[in-house]
Length: 110
Length: 113
Figure (tube, each protein chain N blue to C red):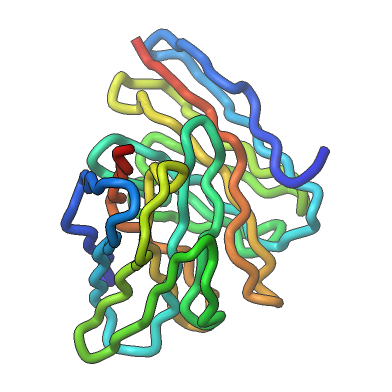
């Protein structure tokens, strides 16, 4: 079965330090990968998707099909980055509902 | 209404009672979804609907039912609530024609006692 693995439940970093939130997936075809973010008391929202190849709020993520990974990175963490981050997978040109990982809570310490 | 609206915001429900969580969207998205969010388990798909008149089962459908009589509404019903259904429920929608990302509602926090 298709699966998304986020190995870290909690990641704490100091302000200004680099951040890497790990995401691995299991799917042999052509996946579409996403990162969603949930700030405190807010709804889940899209952070970025791999087909856009863009940087949002300083975050980037590159799809590595060889390692089946889609790690989220930011060179310098900010306090406002503290949130819950979910990696998600779909396939079949988005006609299949998203499968989410269990999430990683990022805590940026001042 | 802008986006997706869920009601109620929160609810405490006695076990065995019937409950319907409401979800309405005004974006004319064809696809709608119900997820539950549990600590340590992330978001799990309960049911989905690719278009009005059709529904499908997700990863954790047992104990839940849905209907999609029109494009805008996608209610989730718990026929006889049990404590394990205590969770935060999120409704979401997307436009499959344009492969748009999911838009989420604010969630309903349900406690079954």
